[in-house]
Image: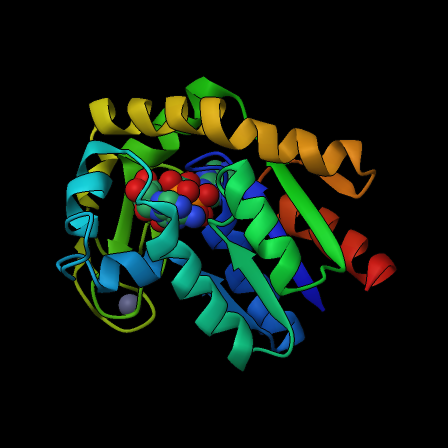
Length: 207
Ligand code: AP5
Ligand code: ZN
């Protein structure tokens, strides 16, 4: 299946994308991870790092190029972190069709709590949360033993800025797919397992 997963920063897109990859054997296309791996790449707009550490969007041409290349190689995929504004929607429409569009709905207070408590494995990228999903041993990845770190943009101030950028730029994307009648809204405030059960039902029905 070709799946788009939308949601605010901290809504659980990365967490649920891991489940989709495992269940359906599809590629995980994530602009956030791709940009973090190329933070210091020189572009005509500057480096991705400058935008990301401020919680702002990286300029469209840089991100579109990443997505275009990733889509060329992918058969089935879950697209996570893109499109984030209506210009990116237009680019995506020209590049591929989608089978399912998911939207993880989570309230603002919960988002801040999730972002500031998130820890990520430096080695394998697995997500944890100090309260909601702690590792067995503090600071150590259950899966690979790697060190757990906090993302540069997960401070409270930057998290709030990212949520504002989402509301201004990306909520219109959510509304666009709602108007097209293809949006599958998922209650993202349930436990990770409950969210996953709802997602799996929708994808099995649609794809
Ligand atoms: P990106 O990496 O895409 O970050 P984001 O959208 O802000 O999303 P996150 O990764 O923060 O959250 P998530 O929804 O994946 O949540 P997660 O599963 O980790 O983008 C980063 C930056 O890159 C942007 O600010 C921008 O600068 C740039 N960028 C990226 N794409 C771009 C684009 N298209 N255009 C321009 N710029 C772009 O979960 C969060 C936490 O909650 C974890 O700790 C997790 O364990 C926990 N959790 C998950 N689910 C639950 C649950 N059900 N209950 C309790 N806790 C939960
Ligand atoms: Zn790990």
